[in-house]
Length: 314
Image 1 (cartoon, helix red, strand yellow):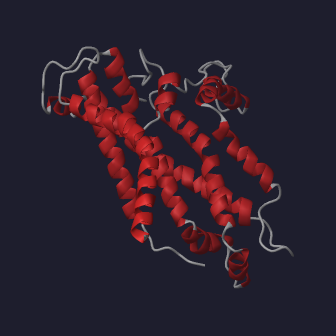
Image 2 (cartoon, one colour):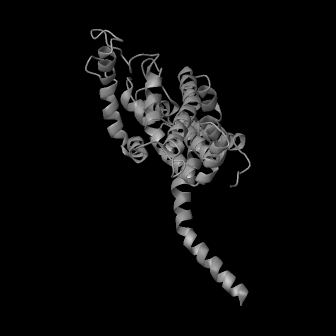
Image 3 (cartoon, one colour):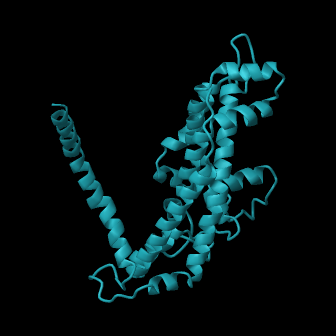
């Protein structure tokens, strides 16, 4: 009787999973496998592949100066974006939850913390199209641009000689990074705040009664208890750092899909799309996609491994 019930349960679960697993295999796994196969051909993206070229696309990939430059730019984003975003989000989350004065009600956040939390989260609900329009006006290279207007009003720049933010080879990548940080801080602030609110306030109060400073409370209590959330945030930000396509393609100069000036803001995603749609080098682009997939997978595994710690219970 128990065996029949177990079989019925297994059949029910299997029947329930067949449809979603079939859709996942058809629309996710199979395209990955096709991309891997096409990367060994001379596929143009239109007609079926006519010639097997083996590792030729991969060899050409690592001899391509633009690809290597794009890889370096993604590496810079990969280092800076998670560090800056997580540090800012942790700082603001701590201030909003435990940074205020300790009163009769115990440890609390700064005054108006609910309002600040909403303000910080606002960029997260904006679509990419709205972000692009906003920062096109912010980074305008004439005196009507928001940043040029502010710097001119403060006397930092000459109104007749505005800064070419997105047209500057030295500044363009950092302008894109600033947008990514500005957009992401609010989401991770809410993530860390939710995790912080699950920590009993008595732990903070006991530490402060023992004479611990705010910085000691943060580094010795708050951060270790939030480490699982920090680890998750690091993985997602690493994935975001390997993308950046929409902002680079829409905001930066270039003949197609941005990346300028002189490929100084090129990222892997924009170079992939340009090879696939503009140059007709679909096999080469598929090889690039496989490399991006491998890098992202390895980075995620490395982050999970390097940031692994024993769980702290309270």
